[in-house]
Image (cartoon, rainbow, N blue to C red; front, side, top):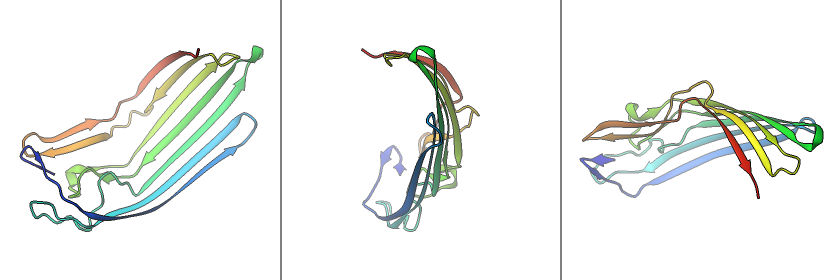
Length: 171
C-alpha cells in the first residue's frame, strides 16, 4: 500500500488452495486440441499492515478464482516438404484485485483474449514466416494498477488488438 510516496508492507499469513487440469488431445495426425482450467481460492488468514489496517479474510492480489485456456492447432503439409501451422487460442482470467484492501477501484473484471497465427515452415525448418494477431476482439484490460495518495489511480493497460508478421531464420 502506498502511504504518500512510500510503499508500506508487513508480513502476512495466507492460504491458497486450488486445482488445475490440463488436457491435450491429438484429434487427427495433424490436428491438436488443448484445454486448461484452473481454480484458485487465495485469501489472507492474518494481515495487518504497519498503519494498522486489517486485511485478514481479503483475497490475495492478482488471484483470479477461475482461469482457462483453449487452443486448436492444425498442421497442413505442403508439396516439397514445407508446412503451415494454423493456431487459434482463447485465454480467460476471472476477476481479481490489484491490492490487499480489495478496493472496488482496484478490482479488475474478467477478461478473455483471442489470438491466432499462421506459420509457414521450410522443409528443413530453417526458415519460417508467421502472420499473427493478438487480442483480436480488442478487449480492454489492466495489467497493473496503483492507487497513490499523490497521483491517484495509475493504470497500465494491456496491449490492444495487434497484428504482425515475423520472419525467422535458424542457423
